[in-house]
Amino acid sequence: MRQGRLILVAGVAMCAALALSLTAVASAEAKTVWLCKPGAADNPCDTSLKTSVLSTDGQVLDVDKVKAPRRPKVDCFYVYPTVSDQTTTNANLNIDPELRSIALYQAARYSSECRVFAPVYRQITLAGLSGIGGGEAFETAYSDVLAAWQEYMRKHNNGRGVVLVSHSQGTFMLERLVAEQIDPSRKARKKLISALLLGGNITVAEGSDVGGSFQNVRTCHSKRQLGCVVAFSTFNDAVPKGAIFGRAGAGEDVVCVNPAKPGGVSELDTIYPSEPFAPGSTIAAGIAFAAPEQPTADTPWLEFQGAYSGGCSSADDADALQITAAPGAPKLNASPTAAWGLHLVDGNIALGDLVALVHKQAKKFVKKQRR
View 1 (tube, rainbow, N blue to C red):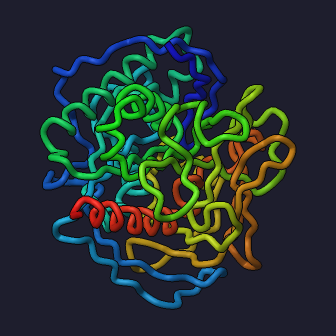
View 2: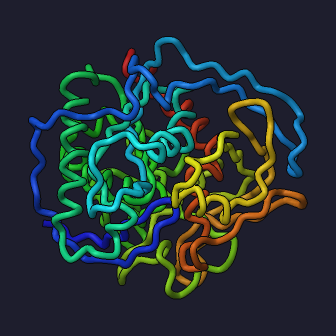
């Protein structure tokens, strides 16, 4: 069974790198609690997409009335990062305010392209990260994600293409899910539009686009490639020697794909909700430090077009999305230390580009299915 280097993190949590043996099998009988699900009441992924387009210094230039399609033709399956402030090692299945906020921040925007499914899972909490002594806590969390995936495939997929979306601890969950449930199966791979696995050190064999995390699911090299992986961790300074992200073991590279321009440098389309992250939560404090200068507007969303530019760098044997701020752009800070880089903004720094990428990939997938 494959050994994975698991750094169980999320938006702001501190943790250590652990080598865990991933051997548990989830119970397919467990009933999934859905954070986001089409048609569900009080769904944080079903929200207005009306957006204020801002200049680099925060002045409103335009208002974009983005509309979600009535009948999306593809699905997105989202697994959120570590956000739980519960005091146990594993969270329960309550939909706490921080879960609703992270779904809004990282997943809701994809509703312009897909039906969004997001399970609640018994993730390792912020408090639980420091006390992990083995793989049991991870297995508990993964069992819920696997059961939710199996329920989704059994009851809701109906042959539709699916985009996987995750960040941090969510990416570790989906890395294993892809490795075990999708990568070995040609039939399953045919349904995979793409996997957007952010902030989690997806790896490939050095000089290749497979051979690390996955043996068949490849790195994306163009905006119209299907069945491939987009992954990156964001930095705005040199990647430290002891960085949590961007560095792999001997013989491996960490996957970095710029969703705005795979293989190149480009301006990024940065999108945030205007609503503050769950007030009083640990993650809210981290976001306030990482991105302290966000302007306000009367729309649910804020969009900075060209406030930041970025491209993947492999300098000093580290693979990361290196970004540069335009003059006047909101300041971004590494948090909690330089070793983490801009982990807290991974999901939003190029959110507009990620959504645009899904649009192109989904369009090609649907066209291909009609042939």
